[in-house]
Amino acid sequence: MSYPRHATFDLEGRTTDPPLLIEATVSYSDAKPGYFLAIGVFDLDSGDVVGGTGSTSAGPCNSGYARCLVEVKSDSGLEYVQLLLAGYKPSMSMAIIAVLFDETKNLIYNSESDYEFTITMTATLALSVIVPGSVPVTVDGMEQPKGNVRLNLVPGPHTVSVPEIVKLDNVTRLKFQHWSDANNQTSRSVALIYRTSLTAVYVTQYWLDAASSHGNSTGSGWYDEGSSAAFSVPSAIVPMENVLGLLGGKWIFEGWYEEGELLSRSGNGTIVMLGSHSLVARWTPDYTLPLVFVGAIVAVLAIVGVVKRRSSAQTTRETRRSSRRRSRGSLRLRKR
Image 1 (cartoon, rainbow, N blue to C red):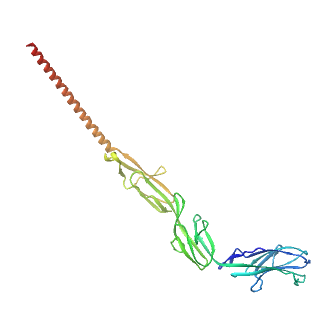
Image 2: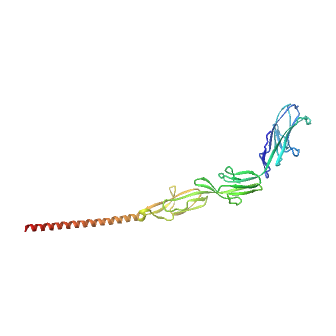
């Protein structure tokens, strides 16, 4: 025979896990056609037949008790029986008994056979924890498979924990908000005094990436699904770095783009977070002042060059005049 040595009993559901099912194979011999084989489960404390139902290979037996009465067809053979118990006690000391009766249902003495066994019961209450399918639940330090959890636990305090953040991918996550009974702690104690069901409420969040190569953009972060996210750049004009910035070079804000499409020309904007978004601020360079400055320097250098060339030419002419005067003077001296 086979039977559960230990089972849990749901105090409110009045059910056991596993069911208190007794399976037995009974062999008999020296019987006569028309004899009856009686099989039943008895409570050793009271001596009574245990409540329940039974069935054999021939079909269901009398309802209300864990017993069967089967008419035998040959002088020897095997009978398979299943007995489902309905009585529950913390410790059930029982015996399964098989005996033969003659055709008038008189007991055949010395045909009795029995097997004693014990089933211990642990009283439990059902605890159900409802969560999104990707959320793991930990009960009394033991992590359960992801998704909804239903456990039969002994009455008393128990600890239930869920994670605050559950990452679904790089741009989507779940964030814990509160329990269905308004408790807002991710790890909490539950006083199990009756069947209890708790729901962990999560909100879906999406990532907003608001990137800018110039200036300090704001707005990047996680946002609740359906919420409005604000993004901005501090100024529509940002000075260039290094020498160009010193010369007045600047970046002019062009607009916010997403996947190459213009989203807004304003430096400040909002977007409804029905999914993740990746925004890029585009800038146009303005070299007007650096070019003017460079142009002015070029002009000054050109003027200086002209002046120098004119001065050099004047010096050359004066040198030539002086040379001619010295030559004429020398000629006069020779004639004398």
